[in-house]
Image 1 (cartoon, rainbow, N blue to C red):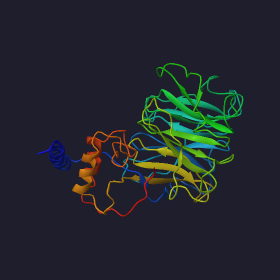
Image 2 (cartoon, rainbow, N blue to C red):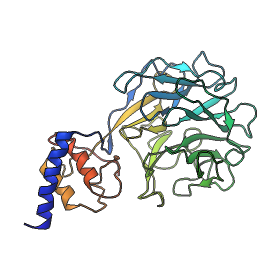
Image 3 (cartoon, helix red, strand yellow):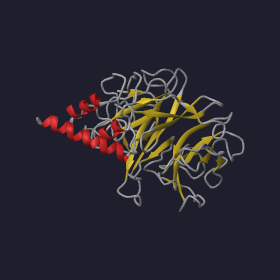
Image 4 (cartoon, rainbow, N blue to C red):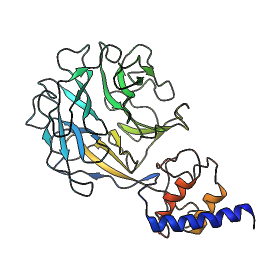
Length: 368
């Protein structure tokens, strides 16, 4: 028996064991049909820029709806379980919100640290990035702290996103020295969460253009960047209309970002879509688009492309394709643990495939 045949038999045995044990990893690279979060979250006002906790039970966003403290306020909705509907949204109150503009939240995975933009007094420019913390989810939010002169300038600094470990801050900045266009995406790092944020670095001309790049979000594995182009300023070429959501990838944390691709339909359309938010497991994306009001929040599933030979069913033939590419970086088979894979075809991809064994799969056009 050849070594490859032996490997196939071994992996089939492992697959049977995985099926019997179950699993919780999700795969993907196509999007489902976007769904509006409904009237508990969205209103006939502007509801935008979602940010979700790691457990999927807290969603923070900004809104122009009545009942706030200023023109734009931060609001929150919660739910008891991810299988439950979102509860009625409520205003975060003071000291988070002010009579000025408070918007573009980024919630930490534990739901206890909140980065956001504000035009409140005490800043360095028109819009600055601030942070507030609380000891537990049951406690009140503390007084917001300005992130200081390394991050904020005399212009507009906003749309923050903080990495899962709290050591990377991606954000957009308007006309900051060293940029390429109107709004560019920058990243600042720090050695520990007790340290100050370092001097930001521009993500460079592959990501940034002479147009507007804003609302960055990085997947928890650090290998995928999602962002918007063209909401207020001009949009980069190649979009479907208005503001679109784009994605770039890299093979490792030290590698350069690849040329961004437009997410296309059904996420993007001829109107505008912006402010993506990816769940930690990569199974869903939340974003803003038109709806009940000028802007609503939607969710869309990120679904696995597991029918590797496109014959309409996930079966042993697909397993053999994974085996034949074992140890390579073939993107066709690299489907786990995150939807975009991890750079190697291995047992993680087999786990993802096992969750869909014997499913009948309609033809799909994957995101490349």
